Length: 109
Image (cartoon, rainbow, N blue to C red; front, side, top):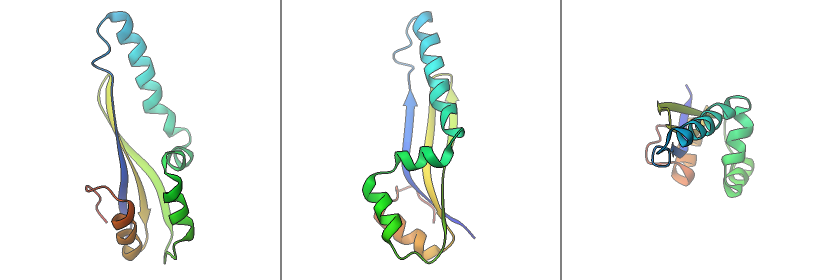
């Protein structure tokens, strides 16, 4: 059984700056790029989003099992989406330790 721990939640919303039709098109294009780009290299995106101290912790902690990184995202409109970044652990004890150190309140190990 895998245990997922969310360590960051990103909210992207450009609705306030898209007041004119020209700005709407530019904002939508930018939002589409930000939404779809991580799918090309999900591991690279998640690693690039992690703080250095978090990467060091993952590399040096004596974890019992393996871990995987990833993200989930949900489109909430043309100019708005939310993305959560997570690490999934094979061992519950690894997930609990990571959650206590780096997890968001919404984590579910």
